[in-house]
Each structure stands twice: as C-alpha cells, then as structure tokens.
Length: 280
Image 1 (cartoon, helix red, strand yellow):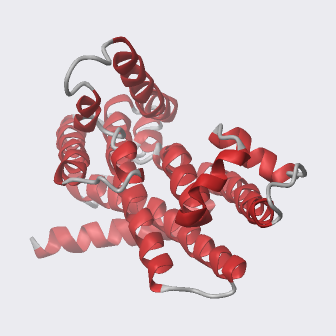
Image 2 (cartoon, one colour):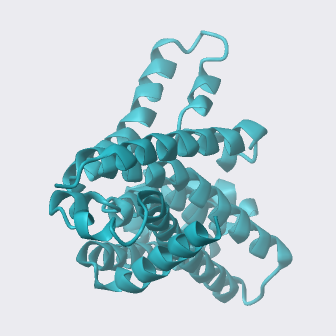
C-alpha cells in the first residue's frame, strides 16, 4: 500500500512538472485568461454603468459580457443588491469553466495509449498508479485554474469597492468550490474515455458533447412537459445540471452527492478498462 501511494505521488509530481510543456494545456489556459480578462474589464464597465444611472454608453467589454451571458445591461441593475460578483463571476464561471477544464484534461492517458508508450511505463509502475496519478494531476490543473480566477475576481471586487469583506471572501470560496465540483465528473469522464479510446479527440468530443447537450436536452424536456410535477428537479440527478440551484442559493445534499457518484463511476469504469488494455 505504501509503495502504491509512493508511485501515485511520483506519477502525480512528474505529470504536474511536465504540464507546462503540454501545448493543449498552455494554449487553452491562455484563452481562458483572455476570456476572463474581457469579463473582468466588462465587470468594471458594468460598475460604471450602474453608478452613472444606466448611461447608454456601454463599452466594448460590457458588450462582450452582455453577449456571453445573454442578459440586457438594464436587467443587471436588479442584481445590484447582490453585487457584481454574482453576475460576472458566479454565472460566467459556471457557464464556461468546465469547457476549458475538459480541453486541458482530455489527454490523461490517450496519447500514450495511441503511440504505445505505455508498454515501457507499465514495466516501471503499476497501471492503477499511472491512472490515478494522471487523474489527480488533471484535477489539480482544473483546481489551480479555478482558484486563480477566484483570486482575480476577489481583487477586482476590492478594486471596485475600495474595500473587502468576509462576505466577498466567502462568496469567492463558495463559488470556486461549486465550479470545481461542477467540473469533477467531466474530468473523470475524460479519464474514462481516454482509457477506452486512446484518442484525445474522442475524449474531448464525448465530454464536450455531454457538457453541452445534456443541459439543452433538459431545457427541451422542461419546456415540453413543464406542467409535470417535479420535472425541473429531474436535471439534478445528472452531471453538470445543478447550476440553477447553486445560483439561487438553493444547494442541497444531492448537489454534493450526484457529481461525486458520477465521478466515482467514471473512475471505476476507466480504471477497469485501463487495467485490462493490451499495450503491444
């Protein structure tokens, strides 16, 4: 057991050190920073928009934020009591972060399976240790990206209000936790698809499809059968569909358990596949 933990730690640290050299991770992180750069600049313009009594002058970055969130700036005044944090950081992070995390973590074991490099690795380290070490690295990459976004959001809030408060700090921590929890099943799904297909493109496509299409499916279901009792709560039992509850501060125990159950299932299936694969 101690040897296994040591090997997992070795794989984890090695992969973490190698992460900056991966083009997909580096390029995706650059675009991730650009998105939030535009978003935070729009946040500052939004603050000016509210303070100037809804001036018609909106600005490029506020227009970008309006387009991404699909909300008219005049509607944001209604959320003034909740602060601009709720609008820009809470909604935008839950809408977009998991897509970037999927791209950054879609190649956990796929490349090495595809080029057969694992036939050299498995003679030096167990398959379970490789799989779990790569998965922990991917989860850490997502957590780091989310944490950096949260710290920046807190800094912008301090700049706008010229002060900080325990409420804003707790809000950032809470939002970062929920965003990470939201991404958890998708990172584990990437690990499963990587082990099964040995293709980065397939891993990314399957995970992206689930992340994008599942909410759309439930939107159609709720629209068509909106009079059916409990139809809106049905989405809570599928990965990536608890955003409404979190945004409305109605989070429940199922919001904690459902992503964990799916993540555990994906890891178990992926590990089972990976341990039985042949590496000729």
